[in-house]
Length: 193
Length: 224
Image 1 (cartoon, rainbow over the protein chains, first blue to last red):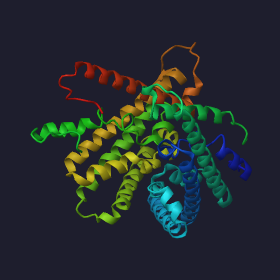
Image 2: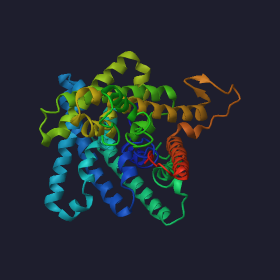
Image 3: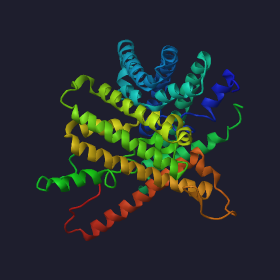
Image 4: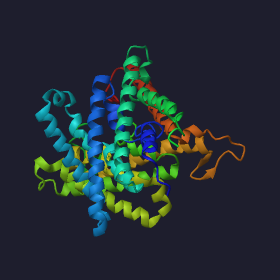
């Protein structure tokens, strides 16, 4: 297997291999909280932070589980560590920035069941990334997630002002918009090499 | 759940309702729009969709059963964590089972089998239904939901396979001159097909509501 360079991984995960638009990870917040940019953007940043922690923990866990031949416990360990990490982040945010804590509300604990967080741990293991590759993958993925969330939120803010047929309102419309965004992001294919 | 099961009906009928609820009335894919990640990512062909749907059905039924059996033992404060560990256990079982049955399918579905853990549908059912009901109805409801999920996935996967590949379940439909609509098997196709199905259902529901309003009089049944 040819080792991908860090730059390649970063560009690919942000653009052509975007977590949301190309790999369908983290669809629930993507459809659920993209009503306005002011919510979507901070949530994207918080998720990026959790993704980075999850990636780091998954890497450390692999170092422990691999030599002990306990691979079958991988999934359970990942999910428990991620849940604990989210709890820590929640406590940290609550202590240091109560205003941000209130703004994020219920979406902060819900990051635990965000597929993007578990996905990053699983994909970096499946692709056999080393430490720096894994961290780059996680940060790029988080940045791509934030980008996709912010873009869709901006588009939806504009669409809210226009006259849409009543049957198309809601999830159907959001999915169509997401499809067009995804189509646009496919144009980046090949940039990362 | 509150929406169904009138108290007077016999147990068998109520079980039937529990079972059918997930297949049509509250279909997880098209009505509740839950568990979208695996829905969109693996539905490039009908066969993938069916395998994914059945894997999810097993996880859903097994974990709802266990949650329901243990519902008096689990302390309230740590219930979500307990549910997740239960779900992760069954997902691991499914993952190894699929690997043993068909390595090809295991490679096609990849990490998305393990991502069933993060499927909001499973956790949602455990929390909203299994934790409050005895094992039998919980399992029936979960199986119904799982089958509804499978049907929804297959409807998306089938359309994407027909349009994007000209085949259904690997059988060629249009002969050699078919020009595949490649974008349908690529990520945007997932969004478009899912969006179109939701649009069709919205139109169907709007028309039904209009008919009901025209008939007026009783107004008893009203698809929310």
